[in-house]
Length: 265
Image 1 (cartoon, rainbow, N blue to C red):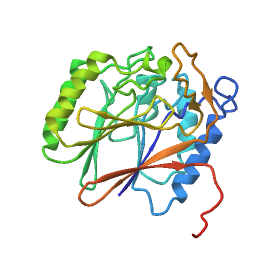
Image 2: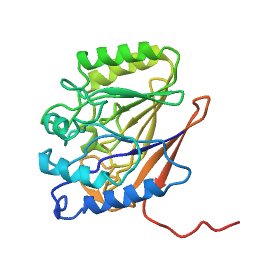
Image 3: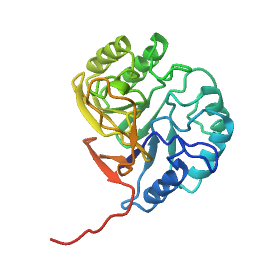
């Protein structure tokens, strides 16, 4: 079973570019083509937030047009650039989207249980996982019992060393409370996040936590203290989580743009 994770699409109005530079619609169209042609066939696509740039209805309509050629199950999540009400208007026909409240849901992929969290803190760049959202997660983990779980969220619950992004990660107290829930369940095989526009891997609460690259522009790898927020056009990519019948997870980073090869050794 193959689960593709794409993230941080930042779709804006047709013809517009993010910061006047990033043609996010063209990037997403290339990503959709890559996902569609991938062999073996991908079972589902998980989009870990920042679907659009400003959160208005026109951007979500544009996003739906761009995703339409993707003949695969697609599960879309909220990021800090998204608006909960506009998102719900755009994706009201998706059966996994709750009619009200936080946009949290779960689905099965073979033996794996995928749990998607809503870390959006309305109008703010950083993320929260309040008591209500944690209680929902606790119930989902209890229902999964001894099943392996992939936990998805937009804001990472760990520091990365990129200061201007760490300033808007998941709130530290919420991250600590999340860690307790993860340790208590014991079968959270992976925590996958967006937000960082870079692939970053860390050990968290006894499991593996990671962020995904963007299928558009990437956040600059600026590890100097006080570095200003910046982005680059490093090659866009997505993550491919492969799940064996025993629910062993292996994660690959897949380049979207065509490259030379493969050449036989």
